[in-house]
Image 1: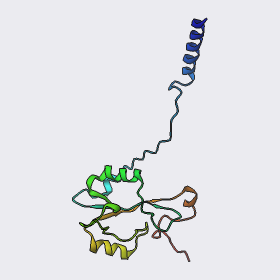
Image 2 (image 1 turned 30 degrees about the vertical axis):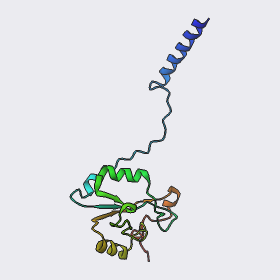
Image 3 (image 1 turned 120 degrees about the horizontal axis):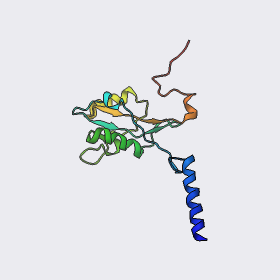
Image 4 (image 1 turned 180 degrees about the horizontal axis):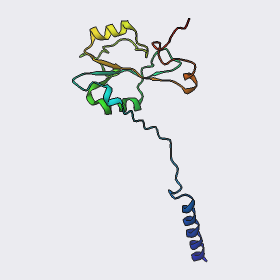
Length: 147
């Protein structure tokens, strides 16, 4: 009797493979992102990058936290050339940049960074929710006034 049940189970499992040749599996969500133009646009010479915390839509400024995936992405691409804003400190351990940097960085903030740091580039990132993308522009720079 046990042998017959085993044979029936084997037959049933092998018959399912006809309908699902790849097998029956659960595929979780995949958030892997490959940006193939990345290497063409960045300066890989002896430069330094500052990775600013990610801004979120609905918020005028950053809350000062970095997203782990964003940090890993840029550290993988740039190595030791990228520094997190929270780690950008002077010899006394004081932050060199005493203000939060918005995604829409102001000219005054850029002048401060140029005169008070030896940074070459700043990386700004922003997360927008899909339902908001139709109603807002991504940056203030892209806003066009129509007559």
